[in-house]
Length: 490
Image 1 (cartoon, rainbow, N blue to C red):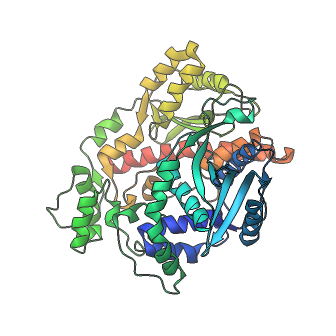
Image 2 (tube, one colour):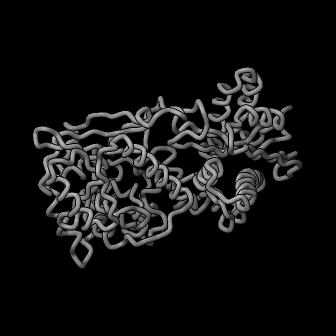
Image 3 (tube, rainbow, N blue to C red):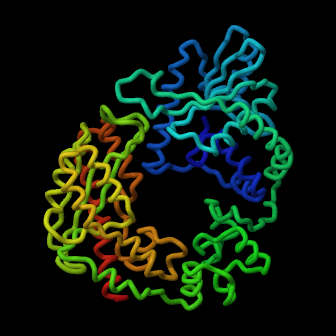
């Protein structure tokens, strides 16, 4: 299929339609914006997982005919000829193109009553509301093309699947006929207006809506050139958004004193308007509660649709490496410990032993968010004989993210206290820009590729070093962030 912006044509058409229902200008912008680009390592891995799940689903229908044309127009013609052939019972990747909207059905099964059963395959273990919209778009395009879709199912990855089981055990099928057909009826009135709007040479007038706050193109649209948008206000409600925009207010700087905001929302507003950080009264006490030597800890994990190792459910989050910086005082590193698992096997038992050994003794264990706590908690199931030692580690954890959330805010956070945002504002010298692996998704993908034997032998050592450097950078960032808070704001 044609690749556009890291997505295939049918997914782009679907995205255009579904987003244009909310915002016509967004639908137009998406149609004009999508160009070919190289996906990141993490994006490529997720796509490949979806492709693998799709391939295994197709293997359940050995009698089916697969439409594998990359050109959507040619594929749609072949699909029609197969539909007209009563001897063909099942079509895989059937393509439909009408009014320049494209759709592909993962599986189409002919029924005896002249209807067809459409099955959508998703590489997820959880049924999600968004899947109804996805299936409704596909069913609408197919119905508009003249084919009667009478049954609609969603095929998901089974939580009970384990490595070594047969393909039929990998999937669970859920009937969503009524919900999808109901959504199709709600979509139908939008077809013609959206088709006309997205074909115009001039973008429709943009209108700021509450839904814009989660739009990936907001900064290219109405958010462009607005440094402190009201969407930076945390947990901004629809009613408060309406009151502000009805008064013509989209900049935080323009929010008047006395406007009803929560304590946390007022904190953000005041920081922006006063152009200085908020430092809570308890920041000093919470930072001084850290006992030394302190250990700065970060885990990396892997989670895959098809388990990498025996006796593991799909998408089980497996810790694969950790980095620990040991400091005698803020910013003073005395040791660095690290561990990277052997990708060929499940090393959680070994990882647990090394973790306990490196963190033994006293002193706070500093993390960012509760991610590390959750990992250690789950390790107790892997090594119940070490539960007592692991509980002691949990009791020593200090979450720097929580301390910042409760006691500190900087105008340059722009509503986010993710580690990357906080570092950019407070410790800009810590950068991931030149690193071969620079984010968690890429780290997960690189380890999974190692486990699957996707790299040449000469590449393996380099990839391992890149993984170690990335995890080490994460804990170094925690050290520097903590040091900056202590030296600058305590």
